[in-house]
Length: 446
Image 1 (cartoon, rainbow, N blue to C red):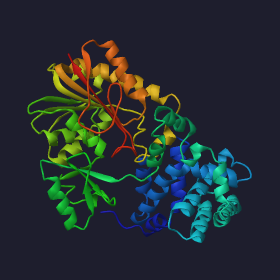
Image 2 (image 1 turned 135 degrees about the vertical axis):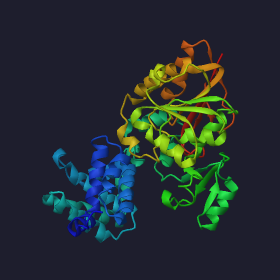
Image 3 (image 1 turned 180 degrees about the horizontal axis):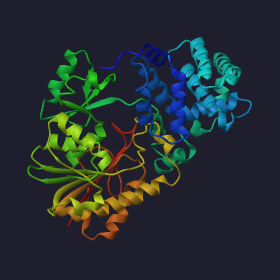
Image 4 (image 1 turned 135 degrees about the horizontal axis):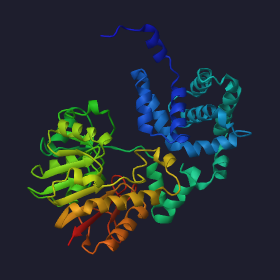
């Protein structure tokens, strides 16, 4: 057992949380890193009491970045130099605290200014103090409203211009709802393991633990908590009674029309949420879960926690000759890699990591994956194509190209869930339907 290190513990506790948050925002926004992975590395070095504050600053800063950056452009006499970007991100953190957190104004200003010393940017103390206090003055005299009118429409909803334009082009009737919902904190939704308990009984257990919750509107196994909690506070989570999964994602099992004894392939399976949902819905299926070697460990962990059995293969889908036994599958689930534009409220860094041309890049990859999986589907079998994208280029356009190449492929209407019927599938949109934005399409093999 390691000996206590008072000096190390003192340094950890005294860490400027504003500086850590600014570093996270820099890594995500300037360097394109994953928010979740960046936070995982940073929180490992933090005192437990500071982690919730960091999560709020990092997730909130990502959500509101384009809006706050727009304000900064109005409050600064000239842009901050590229080499001083940490000052820029500390200002974003300071503005977020003043605008959205229950923190005394003087404390938010003082702590942000103090963080400059640790960042070796002490020269900017006067600048940061002046900008933050200018924001407070304009907030108090209501002149911020005038500044807002000067911001572009994309900045008002904190989206990059190209993504803002793409959403309005694809969904002009629903764009306002999509953008507004994508800036909200998502609900915490659980999927009840039907092999362990029932939704009714689990809701009773939550009530007994004074955790307020309600059943999901469409999924028959979903529960939404009124207030999110860490998974270690979710009753019977470790015992496999429930999993965290959005309602739109839960609906995949009904679309697959599962039956006892079917051979099922989950072709892009990590982290294993839908793999486990299939087995919970129909435990007698013979399921194979496939994903790249660096991604399969989470599938095994989820199966073990839930007490479920599946064959897990660590391989690229295109290398099926290395693991496929030649027996065709009755059902193939393809939740393909995508832009994630339907889940931005859960992953606000998506708006920073996507670039022009990404939708076409993903669509080419998705088409390749469909081509890899199709030979493994049995005649009269069904492939369920799924994305968490709201972009037609990754959805209907991929299906259009695929069926144009395959005379043995036909589209079967998705008819068990609420959504917008497209030419080939069904689209669920954030803010329009319950749950996240998902696309579903059934392909039958003739």
